[in-house]
Amino acid sequence: MPCWTEDHKKIQTTKVLVVGAGGIGCELLKNLAATGFKHVHVIDLDTIDVSNLNRQFLFRKEHVSSSKAEIATRVIKKFNPDINLTFDHSSIFEERFNIAFYGNFDIVLNALDNKQARNHVNRMCHSARTPLVESGSAGFFGQVQVILKDKTECYECQEKPKQKTFPGCTIRNTPSEHIHCTVWAKHVFSQLFGEVDIDDDVSPDLKAEEAEHPEADSQDDEAAKESVPIGTRQWAEGVNFDAEQIFNKLFVQDIHYLLKINHLWKTRKPPTPLSFSDALKLGDSLPFSESQKNQTSVWSIATCVKMFEACIQELKKEANANPDEPLSFDKDHPIIMSFVAACANVRAHIFNIPTKSAFEIKAMAGNIIPAIASTNAIVAGMIVTEAVKIIEGREDEVKNSVIVAKPTTRGQVFMFANMNKPNPRCYVCSDTKEVFLYVNLAEMTLSGLCEKVLKQELNMLAPDAIESNTNSIVLSSDGETDPLMSKKLAELSIMDGSILACDDFMQDFGVKVFVCKNSNFKGDQFEIVREMKKPVDKEEDEEKKSEEENKKEDEDRRKRKVEEQSTKVDDEPEIKRNRVEEVQAQGIEVME
Image 1 (cartoon, one colour):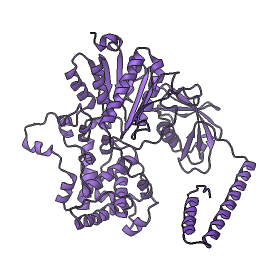
Image 2 (cartoon, rainbow, N blue to C red):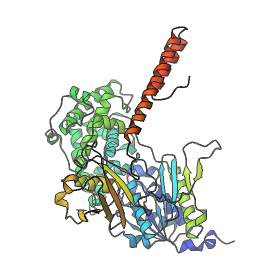
Image 3 (tube, rainbow, N blue to C red):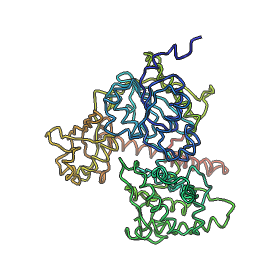
Image 4 (tube, rainbow, N blue to C red):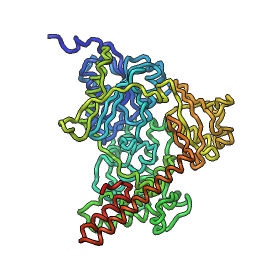
């Protein structure tokens, strides 16, 4: 009886690029090797963390701090020596991974964990005309999307919600957004006063130093002792929860240690260690009681330090009052939230991330979803299933698939989704590559346009921009416009109605940005939309106001009617009246 690979011989000559060797990536590489693929290349910049070991089954304890791509390649080759599996321990954004590089592969399989990298690979595959299978998981949810140029939606055809789950290595080592710092601060609280979880460790793993210094004597007893990390709680108890020593460990010693991991900072701006004494000099320090009341303003770093110190002492007292019951995170607990806010802002400052108010941090807290190994396994299985169909020319059979957390009425947790045509308004894959930028021209700077709009929102790497009406250079990736970065857009003759032709040579990507004035925005605040907003006509505005007034009158009449009924009978109508007012306060129409 012929084996499966004999009936699917084409997969043995197919060149496959896998981007990502984490949770889904491990399962995917295993599936490719077991299915019979012979030529696979994997790219991943990350190193193995202790928290990866519960689901990324290719890795073991002795692999901690080593390259994920390298170890995955080595382990896969052990159980399938025939596979030609190569790797790059590199960033997918490096210039050598250009369009020609993607063109060398027959198919690309994504196993990434962030939107920016997904957008980049999507654009590179689009330019290279290489089929892409996109994937992702969040807890019990998972999805697989097949992307074929001119036939299906690309990854950016539909706007994506902001990412709310983050990999542990990003939280511990390379935060790039304030939410990463907020999550880390929550973990600090748990490590000091809550139920200790190894997956919530906040310090860099001490074994990384051995990886950075392979010449060290592995038999040295002292070095062996130092390679075993001590728990944060145990260390804090050893210094009697001294706030200054805890602060210096988190923001000086651990940061110095991170800086030794050189590869992390090849394409990132490194953090700057900050001691307790130096932090107290950064801004005016508000008293504890005043800071507690001032939740909507951004605290100075000096205030954060004082808050950090005061909260540790208060939480220590609370924990000692009931030593058998660890504290648990509660966003409505003022001391806990103040500690998390202060801690998050200091870390954000160290990693060159703008700080936020305690109110904003409270809104962000608590968005972590644990990774589930079984979800990753199902997703990886469907990636290979769809990849085989594409390779064998059965593109009419490909499907998108979705895994849901709760079974449907038919008992299904796994189902297929529609394959949609490309979005004609997509600024990546359609013929109409344009967006509308609403901004305050008198306040938005050229730096804000470059960093926040083009790089962060539109995911360009090295953008260039020309004002189409005057054909003047607004932004140059080679540094010619660097002296103008602090200038306001209005000072550069960019006005309402200006059209910016923006392009990124590396991604072979270009988009027209139609500039629209919005004087209500402050600073570098902006809004990007795919279709121009319809201007509000004065007559329409008056009609809307009239409708709102009529609606208010109707609500008042209904309210009076309920109140009149409540005076005639027992207290049951009073309950109804309170419920009506409660629902009306929420803006919900009540049918009586």
